[in-house]
Length: 469
Image (cartoon, rainbow, N blue to C red; front, side, top):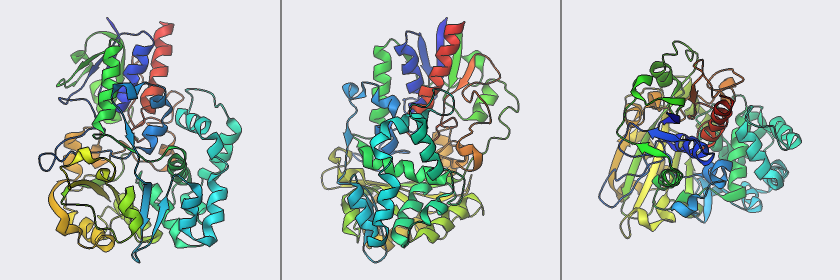
């Protein structure tokens, strides 16, 4: 009998398996697709030689993850590549605000009236970032805070809505960039704890940047899988699990799946009936005949580029997709240009480009024209660079990855109390009513992102259970 079986070979499932194998437990992973990866894959979606990331592409939480940093992933081929700027936010006048590794450079891009405000906001947390991020990403009860005072100060700043936090800024440049940071998790700007979301992304950039993985996001998953195999773990692909009886006998079963799928497989009835899924996304992967022709020079050297004219436009787009059940006329966009720093991703002189906008859950329309009209506002002539595009709306995203219910790439709405209390109000969010069944997906704390911390935290709950039995 195995000690643990993990269902789903995304970053969280693989991390959970690695953590258990490192502690001497026998582990096997079962994945429905023909390769490992989940939300961290790389595929030729458009033309031969153009390697795209179907989901996550830039990894501020990955490089800052306490779980990943404790593992020898570089030994297994993971290499982080940093663009000159982690992120840029261009404006229609040809200028841009930036999120730089340097706090001073970032603050200066906001203008003199907000530079000091921004520095006072982030600088107190940076010297204690490693402890803060461990405490923040290990909540709620997987470990005691190592620096409860700093964590409490961060909570006071971050638990109010982001609109409250950005009211400290006097000009639109800082407000817009910060609104875009919150938009990365598709959260309404006036929602509970959205200030914390923006702060985490900003601090992550200042601490270690917003890199891409050389060769694509698949290299993160491949490194985890290779390390797991060296630890004696097994990985079985092309193995769809529909019920617990499909799996070999084990002392514990750990699911890197949506709560909905887990409830069906493990016959948990309506245990997760109140769990909410959020807005979906419409994503386009581009093969380009050269770099994106950004008007703002800062955007040309940034790994990630946010697209939204101002904070009002961003707020309207997020509200349309998440609350008004309609596709926005001017979508807020997140774009990543890996070829700025990684020439292995496309043939010589060509580039891959990654972009998405928010749409209602399950939306079946085509947002291509609206997204490209937005891009043309900030990069005139963009369409002339397009060699091929691969589009995916909510139905296609859900078909590729069953965790993306309704096209929700976060595996659950990041709004209200569900920002912190996911998948439900419980002292043991990784456990279930079945004593041998656990959940480790992005539906559990600390939530979405390629960081492995949900898997790491769940593994702690599992090994404590196994050692008791």
